[in-house]
Structure formats: C-alpha cells, structure tokens
Length: 83
Image 1 (cartoon, rainbow, N blue to C red):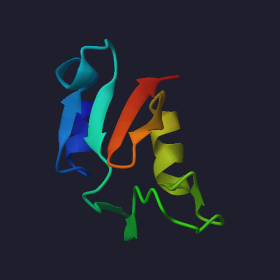
Image 2: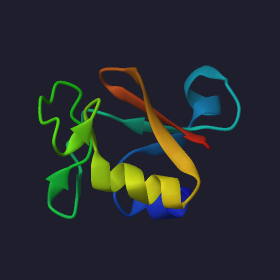
Image 3: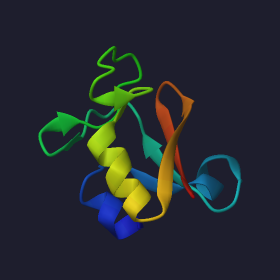
Image 4: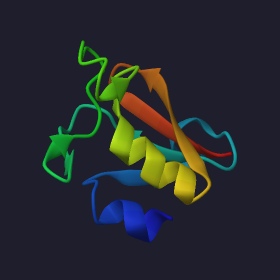
C-alpha cells in the first residue's frame, strides 16, 4: 500500500513513526497533492458534491478498493487504516 501511495503522495510514513500507534499509515494533509487532476485532501473544502469531510471521493473509493480508509488526525495530518 505504501508503494502505491508514494506514487500519489510526497510524504508517506507509518503511524508508529508519528505517534507510536500500530497498523496505520501517516500522510500530510496540507501538501495539496492531486489524484486525477483534483486535490486529494482539503480540510476546509465546502465542495460537498465531490468530497466527504474534505477527502476527494474518487480517492477514498480507490483506498476502499485496497482495503483502507482516510481519517483526519488534525487539519494537517491524515491517517489511513485498514477497513
């Protein structure tokens, strides 16, 4: 999963490196990376048609296909966890 994420995200690490919790992946929520021409994470977005809680719907669908989901830790930090 981390290899696939690295193709789309500049910063990819583990939750163990972030706060010591096991099993998750840590991403930056402020880096403005894009997936298919759209910004992936935008904490303050009000685009409710294409995002849920600031996460691009098409990105979240790709994560779910791979057995993962996004969760904001704070406005600049995303954690990914297994479904």
